[in-house]
Length: 383
Figure 1: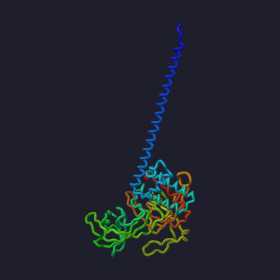
Figure 2: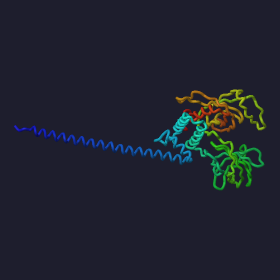
Figure 3: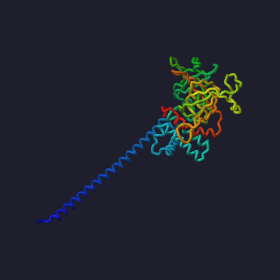
Figure 4: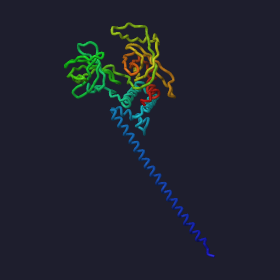
């Protein structure tokens, strides 16, 4: 009988060798797959990051951020989202949350209030440009060439009593074109060479005054006046507190004081601080905060207020946790203007309230809360 043990051993050895080569081949394939995955994953991540940075740069460019503003935004990005810079320029909620965290960080580091306010003002200006399209969110107007179409003007004309309303139509290198000034809806008569004084307010900057003359007139249905450009602008009422846009529901009171003497123009004089304790709450209203700063607030409401009256605005204050306010802080303010708005359903007013001087503790509390208002209570359509 032939001996087959040697053949079986050789066969087994060949089989084990084949299995070993199969295992080695499989390992090579797995390693190659892993390396390829890591390579393509790295390329994908790198491409995504480049796309995010390109979006970041494009938004900064399209919104005309200055070099200083881009520097502030880059510093915030390094602190908040090192690998997701696009979120800061595309999400209002994320931007507000990042700024809030940054202000809390520098406050815990013992930075003085003025330094924190200066940084907050810079972020507010960036915020307005990125998310609210504020063409006039500028740091300074140097001449009438810097004005933008749609800018509202208040006009005084030599020899004509009262003030007139107008707005900028176009700005060219040669002239500033405005609508024919009107008074109570009635256009006034202008001739070439008329002298006028124009007043304007620029958001987050202040008020301006300039004198110029009528260069020519445009007749027809869309009558207009072409004015000479000027660099002689007077700047006044410089804003220390930048205003940030929002849509937040708020409650506010009509405040009454013992009737002071009223001057000839019918506007009550300011109430001295020693009489603030004599304030009486008369009516409670609801409305929307349209913009907010440490110096005042613009309220949109059906309530009718007159210039010189007082309002007590209930500002929501948030705790350390949660999205709901823990209290309301009443801030007293004087109405400095009220503009009626005609709507389909009702008549609304933009009520501009200037806060009475606040102590630093109150201002610090408002500064710590102002970036939470829109993020936690604002209308989601703005997010």
